[in-house]
Length: 279
View 1 (tube, helix red, strand yellow):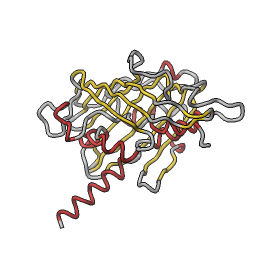
View 2 (cartoon, one colour; view 1 turned 180 degrees about the horizontal axis):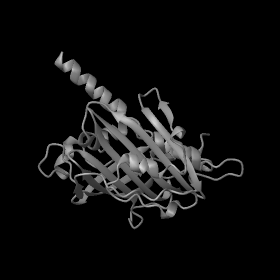
View 3 (cartoon, helix red, strand yellow; view 1 turned 180 degrees about the vertical axis):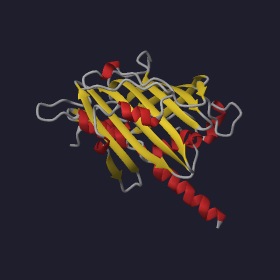
């Protein structure tokens, strides 16, 4: 029997799910081709530095707004070293770097870094909310994803997970809703803040986490988009047990960090198709 942490591999999967696919872009579109909307805009990243995340104080950490990926990365540095990131490459093409850090109690920090080639941040956002992509890369976990726009740059994302095997047997279908706020920085960069909507009536008591707060940075670097996601979560011990000899929360964070690393392969495949069509 495989351990419970597998179910949490999906935790970071929806962290960047901020726009719908091109087929449904009319739901979010304000007249631009990518369908990108944002809540607030600044010309430059925030100058003020973040208060660093501390072990044992995850519940009080605040990501702020308009922070650069480097600033968020630096804010995590008291809890882990930059050398803590591990390279991940799987048979299905997922590739990038991930890191999992226990923060004390039931809290875990899960991070991932990857590069989407030959694209812009708006296209990355759209790809994340393409339902066909989600089912293609996570068909063993995702049952349904429904995104609705609630305001300018504000979204609700309803997640439905398939039953997953845990140490005590198997879960039922798990449901939870996330609130997403998208900000734009400069001409093309985006930050997204994602948090669990604890007041949603559709949430099931049995879900991977009790609290979730995530910052996702999409930054244009040359022709590519650098993606850095940092998620702080309070795991549900009914799904991610803390055994006497083994705390599964660390492994859960590692699996969560790997959950979004399909983007690099997605845009690699897209780039290859474009090159073939131009030959």
